Image (tube, rainbow over all chains, first blue to last red; front, top):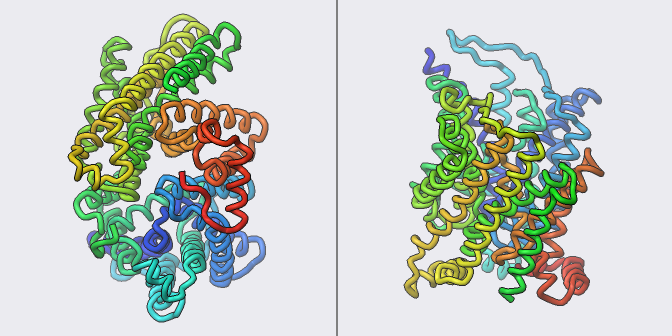
Length: 286
Length: 325
């Protein structure tokens, strides 16, 4: 019974992690940029949803879509105005630039939202399936996360923009020769990364308490999921997220909750060295 | 050129070391912090500047140095021996860890080094029995008034900084430095012409760790108390490369100039714009990246700040990429 409960907890957490990491993974895979801003964008999404729900009485689901769209615009602008100009420079430059933007965003969030933990409380109750407890809000969070992930998968597979993103990821010069406007696609990709971050932040705020200080925790999770699963693909993020969720749930049960985080990071370091392309990785993208 | 650099450095060291004669305790404290960060930046420059490996492991080495120094001192070793232990321990650790992660390149290396900071912080916070966990660790304090203690630590930190700088000059002029520059330009080509890239990278990594360990040990004795979040600080690990970028990556004097100007700026923002100091810091970094791609030394070398600024601004307005550093 304990094992099943652990499994259920791990999968519910893992779906959220997958959704959390997917935007980060896409930006890394397509733009070759480590987006240090990702954690703060998540927190921003969570707080905006909470504000819309708490202060203006907007239904969280509607707020989620509005927030996601707003963050898409923000992400598009950041990439178009700032990051595009240094996108070919060494890792150090792009990483430091996004970190600087993170400092700015974090500072404004601290001032406007303060560090008080907030949560969109839905009070949906708990399902008791023969001794296994499943809180309904977490279940809903998982379903939402999976839906968002699936949506992104369909967009990347089926739409023109999605095919263009994949093309740029595979071979930038060839994509350029096919008439794809690479700067535009870069900005769209970063926008989608921000959109996914905002949406996941909204889902997180419905399931767990959100504080501004979680930005680095979220960023760390995104790192781990990307390394475990491999970069730039939806499947990779899904596998990575589920594995991380299960590992944290199991390590938390057997070693104590303080080791849950350590286990994730240790797994990441081992995988980095053993198979840098991740569990689902494609050779040649490392 | 070398003589000029050394004399600029000597003047700066004199200015730092003489602070107790002309400044109050606040100034002395600031001088100690500057010397400490200068050492960290000089250290980072070995791996990040010369070899071009984007390392974010500075706080891992610093924090480990803090804990090794504190624990050996609590075990009864004299202070200087504890600092030596911190240096050697962190150096050995970096050698072993480097063997594993220096096979990674680019983003993967960056993430692995960043991960090291997190793992060490988590491990140290969870092993309560040895390290005191999240409660931190008290380190025996120095006797004899705050003024006296501040002077001692000023001398120590400036001393470490001078040694690190001297080593950096030696590396810059030696085969090692040449080899590391080759690795930075093109690692495969460097390997092809017979440079033992693995060994060179490991030496650079160990050098970049050792002095962080010494500084960490000294910092633990200076503050008298350390805890995991303070010792393994994620902000510090990013600040250090930024300081080098501000000064000029891969140059000998760059890290010194960068850390000094960065800390003075930061101090100014703290005292004048308390609520927005982080945002201003972020804005400064953005400006450095776009308008000072070669760092402060890039201005001194070349055509003057206004020409460089105008050029970058022109490119930026046209929407093209800014200059590659």
